[in-house]
Image (tube, rainbow, N blue to C red):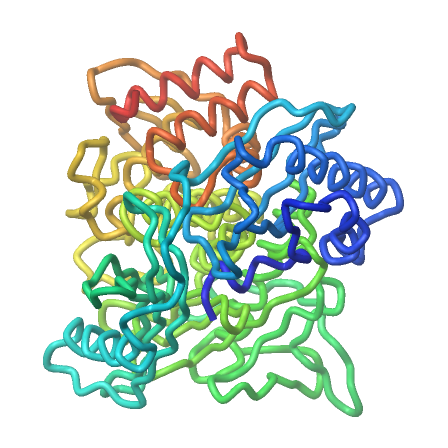
Length: 532
């Protein structure tokens, strides 16, 4: 299922008669767990935003052929309101159609952020390339992306969309192609194809991955909330939306005495404990620090699949199942994938998809990956686990000596991994998204800790800057607050590095003031990675 179609959860809003649909929007958008005051505030925000859409339809690019649906509502403590919308054109999803309306506490319109500003006017929404042809092109492209691997069970599901992200809007097929490699591990890629000519437009990985592995029970002995059912305990957490962990065949882990795992991979439930613990810490971080009630902010839990595939040195979040999947690693370079920061990284992909929806390609894809690295790191510090203390190394627990380095990525100086960018340049958009993430990871480290040499929890870092400037950090808590607000309020699906600078400056202004030390440090940290 496509990322836009999954998350356009609000009722459709036509530009004519928007105010009359506020009740439907409210029912579709408010989280069931929201308190009465929160529901009232969100309802008011929806009413105000509906009025804005009526008054400013032309300015927001919403002529009669286009509709909008609510994706998310954020109401600040001071009453400032932000309503995020997805858009359709003649009932087709618009890539780059998402926008955020910002309003004062009294509902007065302040501004709007739009992913793309191109006006949409198509002569026809009837494709010249039929759906089966689009599916065939995607299947061929997926096979071509895996030369030498005879993929099995390959299938493709095309969806007709309007692409407004890349130049003049055009009719396109967005096709999700999936299959299994010779070891049974999943492969998936999204292909965007011109619906008139069949020409390829773009492609990106659907499985948002953080490669890694690790030893069993990386975090030592941990406390778990479980569910007693019948005569056994289930590895299902009723205090966190029934978040649970299964084996690869989707069999829920159970235990007779509520003592799980052995600390070794000889017991299959050991890695399940790591996955469940990582999910719990991530849930708690988002709730305690940012007030977010689960990945979707709706109180619903996700689930983990462990021991997936054969020698799979990977872990990934997939929106289609609202779940995390962990391989056991190859046993040489990587062990089981379910490290604490890996789990938090993957779950944070889910948060991104429910908020900004950063497209997993180019600079927006790098920001998507960096968002998961940033929050994965912050969750690790938040957990305060003595067996896995917080650090700015990504996936250090899952890496074994055969990998040639002691972590997958390094936030203080990303180029230490051999491929990531320390600083922005025009070539960053062409990098693999895991390498393009380096610019934002480096910014995040500098914002929190500053430049130069520093030792934290026994790990020594030495973070340089683009022009030799000096940056004094403002701490991890403020990094998290600024990045979360930027992600949930200002970033859109097409945000690039220049847009991320603007979004985080807006967030710092909202939280600390335009002339604050925090605001100035955000600017300085971006300049230190050559984003100006």
